[in-house]
Length: 174
Image (cartoon, rainbow, N blue to C red; front, side, top):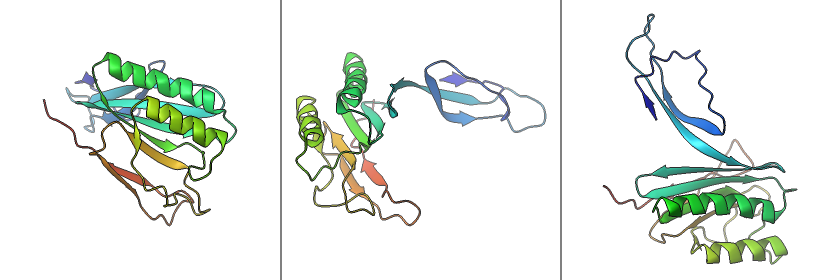
C-alpha cells in the first residue's frame, strides 16, 4: 500500500506482477499531499487462467478464472501457490471462489480432482450443489472455504449468463 502518493487519475503506477486493487487520486487542479494505491500480487499462469489472492485482516480470498480449455493441473498449481503463501503468513481462513469452468454436479475427472484438492486444502463447498450459476443450468462458478461459518449464495443476473456469487466472511478483528 502506498499512501500520500500525490497521484492524479492519468498517472500510471505499474509494478511487475502486481495489480492495483484500490486507488484514490488527488482531484484538485494542483497536486497535493493526498492519494493511496493498494496493490495485490497477481499469481498468474498460462492457458488462460488467472488466480488473484487478496488478504484482509485474518482472511485470504483467492479469486479464480479458468478457461474451459485449461487443464485442472494448471489451475491446481496456481491455487497451491496462493494457499501456501496465505499459510506462510499465518492466515488460515481461506476462501476460494470464481469461474472454475468445472461442472460441479457431474462426476468427471475435473470434478473429482477439484473436489479432492479442496478436501486436502481443508475447504468445503459453500454453495448448494443443487443450484446453478449460469443460464445454461450448470454450476461452474464455485465457492469453497476453510471456514464453514462463512456464507455464500448466488444472485440472479440480467446482464450476464453467469450469476454473481456473494460471500459473507466471518472475520476476526485485530
